[in-house]
Image (cartoon, rainbow, N blue to C red; front, side):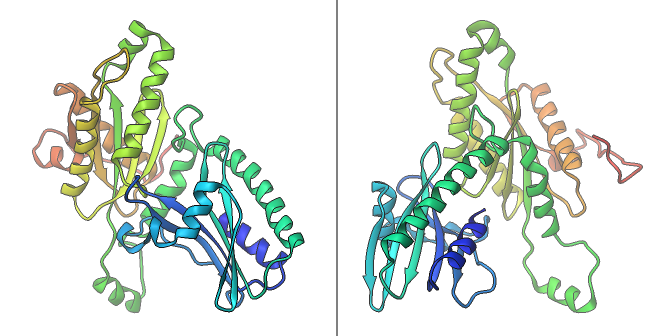
Length: 326
């Protein structure tokens, strides 16, 4: 949608030098500017930062003070930079200001041009609300189950293992391939929380846990609520140890968080590495089996499917067909 927005504005306005959307990502004190879409006058397609980009490679929030000011004040700002004008427009959803639209032009935008941009951004705001409604869990604001398959298959497409020409194979041998991990998180004894305190308090636990997830995992880790007390994380890590440490950090943070009225709760976590040719259901099944093992072993722990297999505590499931029925 961001690409569509910058493309439409470039076509509607009088030959802007550049139209770009920047999102503020990361935790307070460590926030960065992520380029969601940027289109210059001579570009045929928009460019953007990868969702898995290293945060240290992004500009810090304070590195672009006027952009930051636009974000805070929710106001349209203008600057003249040498021979160009830069106009900043805040991008907002129903919940918060999420970014800045930056317009670079050779001359100062006319009032009618600014009104046009603001009108288009109102449409963007409304459409973003519809997308959030369809793609995000209404209680927690995390991504929902419907959005999972597309992100998962995109991750699988970047893994080695597909047929390639000799030239492609030579390049792949020198490439550093990304590794993706899927984790399933389940609240221990959640039914008893609902039974003892009621569903309203149970919903508050789910909401607070989702905030803990956002505060614990990185901004580019994809966080989902699949329903009930079951959550899913799709992340990119170098190795199993890094993935295990990330999940263990969340388990620790949850155990030591004081939930109002409820007190302490714990989570059981299972995770697996995503393999070339994996289906969403296949990878989820492996992680879910690791969760089941964690619960059987006493709960409040993190279990790796691969480690359980290596230790002989679990056997690898055999599939007679590549076709999986849902």
